Every structure is written in C-alpha cells, then in structure tokens.
Length: 217
Image (cartoon, rainbow, N blue to C red; front, top):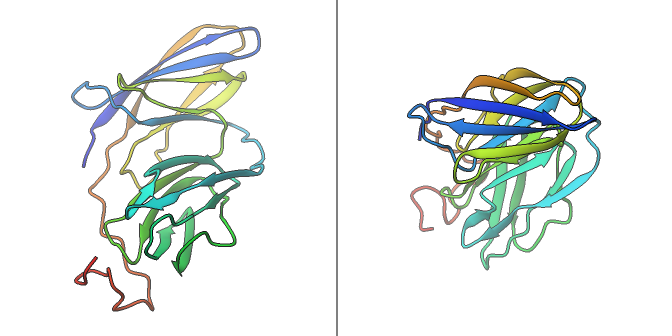
C-alpha cells in the first residue's frame, strides 16, 4: 500500500489564548485521506505524564488495529480469544515480547518513547497493528472527507506531522507557529507514502508452534 505526497492545508483561527488548527489531508491524486492522524508537537513537549490504554485481541485481530497514545501510556493487552497469543514488537520506539498467554497479562507495557510501533503476534502471522506514540496532547484523525481539527492549541512553535497506516516511521514534519488571537493560513506538504510492510520476523526461541508460517492457523 502506498500513498503519495499529501497536501495539508492548515487554517489556524484563535481565541484570545488558544487556536484551532483545521487540517485537510489529500493524497497524490488529490483525494481525501480518511483516518490519517495529524498532530502538532510543541517545541518544548510537556512531561510524559501517566496514561492508560488497551489493545484487545478478538477473532485473531488486534482491536483497535490503529491506536494513538501519548508518551508515558501504559497499554494493556487483554486476550479475549479462546486461544493463546504472543504479542511483540521490534520497533525502535518500543521493543517487547509478551510470551504465549491467555487472559490479561499482570503488567501493562509502558510506551514511553515517541514513534511508530508495529505490533505482531508470533503465533498468528496475519495479526498486525500500529501504535503511534506522540509527545503531545494535540492530535486528531481525519474524517471521511480527509479533514481534522486540532483544538485549543496554546500559542507557540510546533512541528506538524501527518501519519497513516502502514507507515512504520514518523515523518520529519513541518514547523508551524501559532499566535494567540491571530488567524493564519499555512500550507505544508508532507509525505505520507509508505513502502509495503515487510514480513514480521518470528521471535527467536519459539519455533514449531501452531500458527507459525507453514503451520495451521
């Protein structure tokens, strides 16, 4: 799956102390991109804080397939299937392995570094999911028309990025300044293309389990 260079049109309209950022995302064919994540990271990101989220496993699928969380989020991985799963990631933003289990692991996984985390199941190789970890509270997803609104941005300098599955890395983004009480229009061009996803490698030490490539699923 590939998407070409995306044109993002940004209009910031502010009140006395904050502004809303309206973002329209289109692909190389000038078609709207639904479900893209747009996020504005302050020049001085806030402390990570403590947050919680959950990614379930239902009918051999991750639910939700795409998650956006703030850095410092503890993510639980309940398994609602009647079979066991082994969740893992080799992504630089978070590398971890939850060995074969059912139910809910006793400890959540802390996502403390911004970036894109690609999840897989070592038992069911068709299971894939993405977690976008951001250093900002300012993010939103585009609707069916490719439009999103990031609300209540404080005045200051930001880096605006766009991301869409199946990108496996963050973009460098574009600098953006939000002025208190000032309406502004800014057009930035962001590349939301992504190569085809490579096959997820198997976790060492788990050969020959049911559901591995070449075995029944």
